[in-house]
Image 1 (tube, helix red, strand yellow):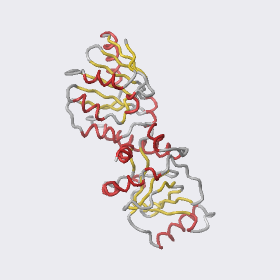
Image 2 (cartoon, rainbow, N blue to C red):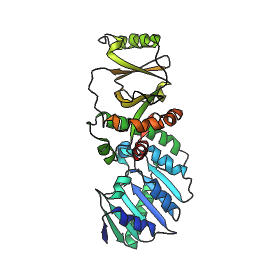
Image 3 (cartoon, rainbow, N blue to C red):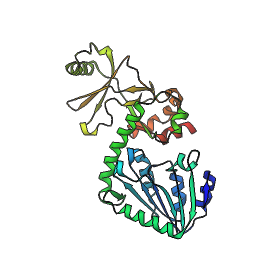
Image 4 (cartoon, rainbow, N blue to C red):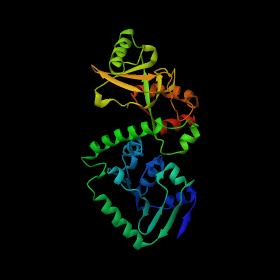
Amino acid sequence: MKIIEQYSELGQIFDAVNDSKITIVSAFASGTESIVKGLTARNNVELIVGTINSFSSPKYIENLIDLESENLNIYMDFRYANSTHWKLYLIEPNVVIIGSANFTALGVSLKRDTLVFLESEDLYNEYLTKVENLKSSPLVLNCQEKNFEHQFELYKQSFFESQAANQSVKAKSTLDSWLADDHNQAIPLFIWDRELVSETYQQAFELIQDQDPEVESEESYRLSTYTCKPKDLPYREGSLVITMSEKGSYIQFERFDRILYKDGVHYLYSFKGKRKNAPFDISEITMGIKSIVSELYDKEQAVLYREDIESIVKK
C-alpha cells in the first residue's frame, strides 16, 4: 500500500498499464478527456459517472462519446442525489486506487485530494462485484442503451439549471478563483444579432405592466427577446447570463430577472439598479470571447462551457 501524492505518480501508474481493463467510478468527472484517450489506446476502459447535484458537464460526456472508441464503455448513474459518490479506480488484475479524488482535472491533479494505491486480488474482485451490482440498477445506463439519450437530455436540463443557480449566487472574485473550483462548469450565454424595434419594446412593456404594475416605464429594464417554444427556452428566470452582440460587442453579465412569454416570444427583462453578483470581472475574458464569438453564434450555443473559458485563457 502507498499514498499517491501527485499526478505524476498517478500518471506513471496509468502509463504502465497495457492490454488491461480499467474501471473508473467517480461522483463527478470533467476535463480528463486526454487521460481517457490515452488509456483507451492501450486498454479497455469502463467509466461510471454519478449525477449528484448535476455537476458533471454534459459536454464532457459528449466529448468522450465523440471519441468513438471501441475500448470505452461510458455509464451514467441517473439517480441524482442517490447516485454513486465513489472515487474508485480499478486496474486488472489486482490494483485498487481509492480516495477523495474525483475523475476531474482538478481531482486527479491531487493538489487538494489524496489517493491510496493497493495491490490485492481479493479487494479488487470485491470491488468489481460492487461495480457490477451498481451497474444492475435500472437508472445506471450505458451510453449505448436505448433509454440513455432521454435520460441524458433530462440531465442536461438539470445541469444547466444547476449551473445557472450556482453562478447567480457567486460572490465576485477572480477568474482564477472561478477556475479553481471544478464545480464551475458553465455559464449561460445569450448572443443577440439585431436591435429590437419600438413595437417590441411596447409589447414587452404592456406585458410586464400586466404582471408587475409597479414597473413604471421601459427605462426600468434592459430587454432581450428569444423565440422558441416554452419548453425549449435555455434560460431560467433569475439566471446570471453573459450577454453580447454577434460581433462580440457589449459583453457583460446580466441577470434575467423576469421572463414572460407571449405568442411564441420570450421577453427577458434585466432590471436596472438591481445588484448583480458576478463570479469574476468579465473584462478578464472579453478579448478571448471576441475571438470565438462567431463560432459560438454559428453553433447557436446558449452556454459558455468551462472548456471554452479555459481555451480562451490559454490563447
